Length: 284
Image 1 (cartoon, rainbow, N blue to C red):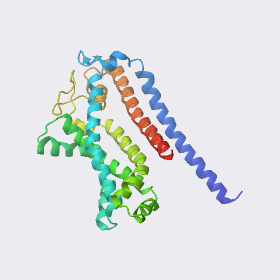
Image 2 (image 1 turned 45 degrees about the horizontal axis):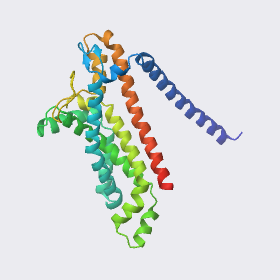
Image 3 (image 1 turned 90 degrees about the vertical axis):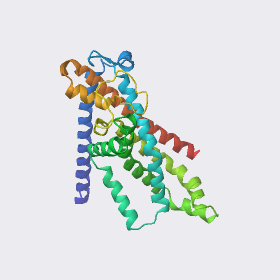
Image 4 (image 1 turned 180 degrees about the vertical axis):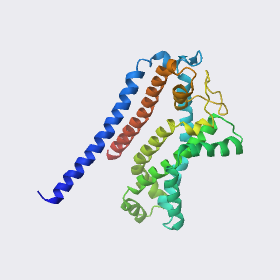
């Protein structure tokens, strides 16, 4: 057997081993959460508000709070992120300024979420006077999601062949017309997929909303954007670490974790299904 073939087999074995270890660890974590949390999840748990010092009742305000803050995050991040990606990839020239901007965006993607939380406190809560509110938390998560949205959208645009643009321009179309008819229809599936995955990540974040709007206990839904709200990740944090009777509320913590994982999984599956559907429609 040739040395190159041996190296190739060893390399594939190492890759398979790493992938197997990741799947095994993930499976162990999911098994622990599902086995300890599925008994807690029922209709009352999903539709009732917490009661008796959060030792009884359900997590409906936390579910709705997570949904509302995710919607605000999408409104803040998606149009701005996609617009920025379109400008960088289609209109901005390849120069030092744009390269610096791209490098900054990539670096922002790796900034710890707690930094975004502190920045949100300074900018939205204090400087803009929004206070600890649903709007301040949503805008903070929007900043967190923005680099992911820009990066995913720009990569989707780069995957569209340059000939699609050149063909439209050669026929007399304007740059925007070529972009609208020949580029965006093919890039939208990838742009939406990356954006939804970024929103799924934001829905599971605790640190950015910890200081900007999440409440320890609210038995009702927020009535306006200036109200505080409950959220699944923060509620899980409280149940797992800060409650006065951790043993009693541990089943609730596992049930909350299971619901949060199911929510994020549903968003990921929706992104995959949407991408598949859009690609299928485009082929037709």
